[in-house]
Structure formats: C-alpha cells, structure tokens
Length: 77
Picture 1 (tube, rainbow, N blue to C red):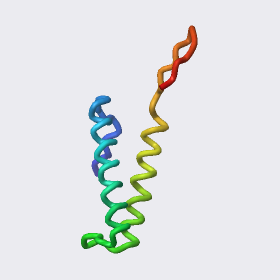
Picture 2: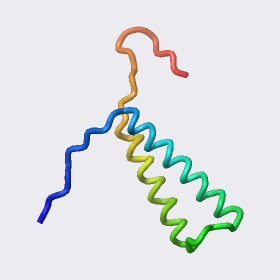
Picture 3: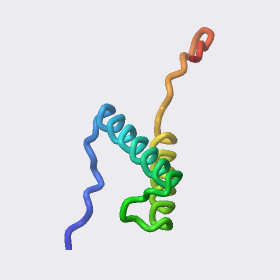
Picture 4: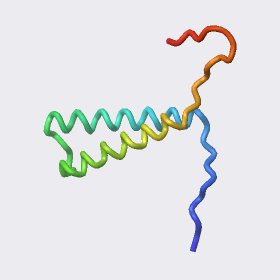
C-alpha cells in the first residue's frame, strides 16, 4: 500500500496563491448563501465547506512567521 507524501515543496508564492484562491472561494460561497443561489449544493454542504475553508485559512495563518526587528522600535502597519 502506498504511503502519502509528507514532503511538500511549495514556495511562498504558491502558498499566497492557494490562500488567495481560498479567500475567493469563501467569498463566492458566502455571497451565494446570502443570495440564496447556491448552485447544485445543499445548504448544509455549503456551510460545511465554508467551515473547512475557514479552518484551513486559520491553520495557514498560524504557521506564518511574522518579521519583527530585534533592535529598535517596531513600526507596524
């Protein structure tokens, strides 16, 4: 039986593209749910998909390492 690949070679731009695509999909599903025009998807399935996308976006965010200078004042923006 084959084992799943645990070594992924994704670049930061790959992850940015994935994150942007998830945001667009989430927005479209949310707008369809508000308009009541969910295309061939039961309401429960759309809600579950939105929860999964939110969870994945949260996990991606939590894995990011944000730069903060060790010396001097931090000027956030």
